[in-house]
Length: 56
Image 1 (cartoon, rainbow, N blue to C red):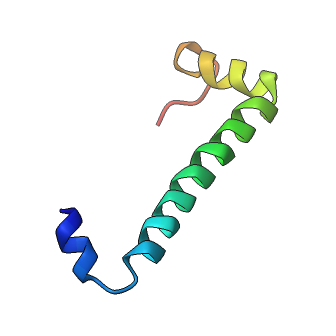
Image 2 (image 1 turned 45 degrees about the vertical axis):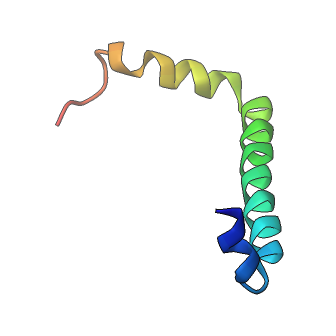
């Protein structure tokens, strides 16, 4: 695989871009998890058991 990538021009750019997207996704996910409102988490956690919600 590495020999194939050596023949592709600009493969370093693709590697850096894909790694940047990968890291940005998980950093964004970590920020979301640490900053989300705990009441929202409780509401979502209890949603399947809530009998007061309208069922379609």
